[in-house]
Length: 388
Image 1 (cartoon, rainbow, N blue to C red):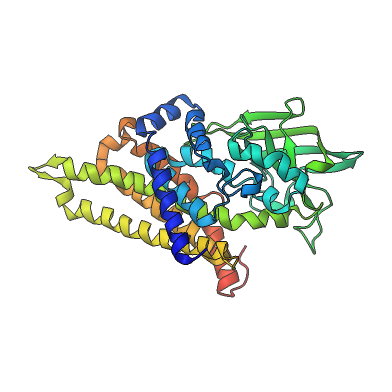
Image 2: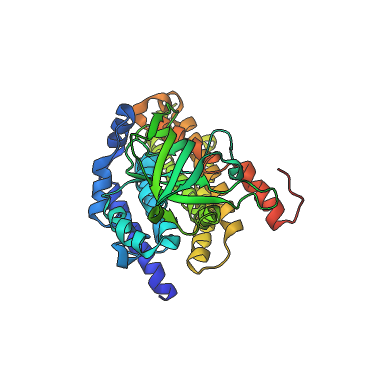
């Protein structure tokens, strides 16, 4: 595909997903947030359009898009006012299957990927644990080999979609941790959410109320050998394959959130009259909004540059990390400045700013913190001593 064809494809995806996402307005998302309701009709609309299989190859029922197109889609979803509620609803069909696409057996791909592409199957991504934090090498969930498969015991935390998921991409230790190779010895399982062996406890949280976040307790869960993703003990390295795309997409979702808030704040600044003039005539209001537009544009350039490198199968670690940092910062600043523009009205849920503000704040910490981005850049790019 030529550069011109790629650019045309990106714009086609941008236009189509913008139109579809904006059929679900701010009032829809406010209602889902208030009632803590999963947005199934929103998901169905994207499933009917074929978008859930955006990055699943065509031979397995998807549409085989690149990361640039998928990133633009997620940006448009967040920017429509759906924020992280809509973003996460689609995000978890598009990206958790990546280890299966890249490393699953042919039988596994043909069995599961078509169901994921149509929305028939929903997955959770079960990596993080309460005692390990960002040091994944110290997870305690353990899988023991038995005839025909594995028996898994352990605990996961901050697991999105567990209330509704059919299966989870589960990382567990299959060999003891070694100091010389701490990230070796973990395996990915595409495990069934068997209620007899999996207990799910929802976490009451600040934002993104339409999408559940959970603790997951695993007690003697059997997983068949055919549901092991790739080779035993190499699971963490397969997870790494998906980290750069996740960082890029999270950046684009943060940028979309910022743009949704900026749209509301700008419109309010044009129409809110105080002392016989619109408040947007005051530079103290106008300049922060303008500054946010500039930062959002710059963050998108970095994210799309990183996505292009990924699609070209080039190294994109520093660019992906930088995109996540810039997207989270620019998105939060835009929401915060829109919040200030509306003043006391920003606290009223009917104006939607407080919902966007609550959701975007998460991205400074997840999927990994801004400080960890700086740790990575300082060590890997600048060659400074490891600082963590």
